[in-house]
Length: 153
Image (cartoon, rainbow, N blue to C red; front, side, top):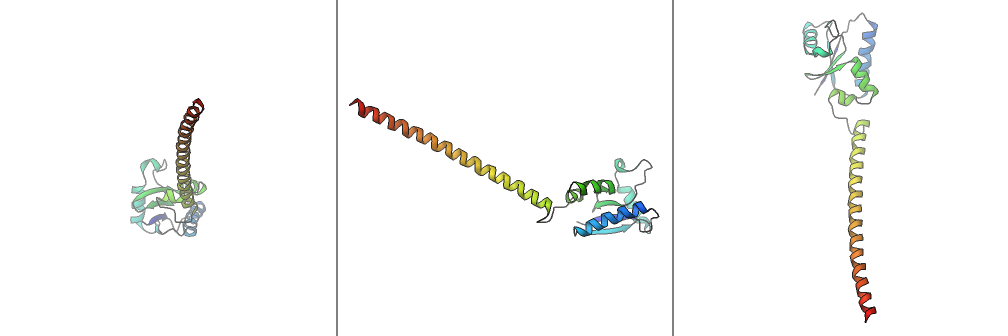
């Protein structure tokens, strides 16, 4: 799966340029496989991006601004949703990718699995202790009956 980042290489807006640089720089830092698609120089890229951003995600004027991020054909979001995912340490989920081994997201999954395994072990130990206690009670009950019989004689 390739992440597609729609950019405008010849944008006059410094805000758009900074947002684009932020997205691309972060993806490079994470070593995420992505492709930059220019909407300023390629009309087909511009049309495709505009047609594939969901209506509810488009601004009031109907024209989405770059950067827009897709996982193949699936829309991930714009800069604001990317920024939120970055702040929440959930960029891989935002991109629809599995976190790589050793990453924070992967470590959290591992921790959850370890906690679940530990809970299962504790439950098994508790059940085993309860069974042993029941067995001890039976043995003591039998032992108690035997000692009462001996005393009666």
